[in-house]
Length: 122
Image (cartoon, rainbow, N blue to C red; front, side, top):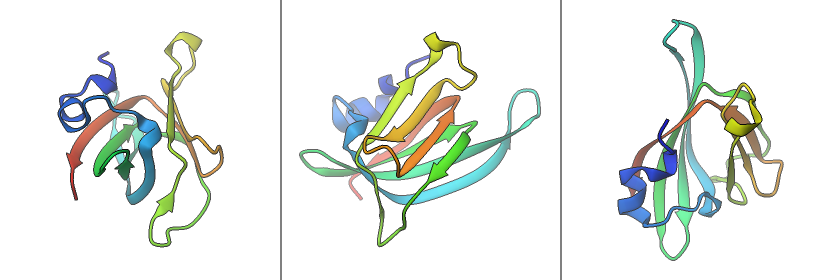
């Protein structure tokens, strides 16, 4: 499986993408889909403000989400202290990625796959 960071949209939009600079959630979508075995899976699509040297937006789809926890409110956006995405493949755990914020409490979930949908300036 290709590393999600080696995505053409990320490379063209940021050069080097560092998820720690995803610090605000401006849009959150939840959907149910089916995997290759026709089992229902949960997906999250999140649009983040990426704020390093200049503000950009990145939309990421997290596939087959489990253990989703979110604490806080949207006024006018949901603040996170940067994302931390840990590839757990070597640990042999059921979910490949563990996603949380650096502050450790605002958002947490695990997922099987990460897809970059869009990078934009607005």
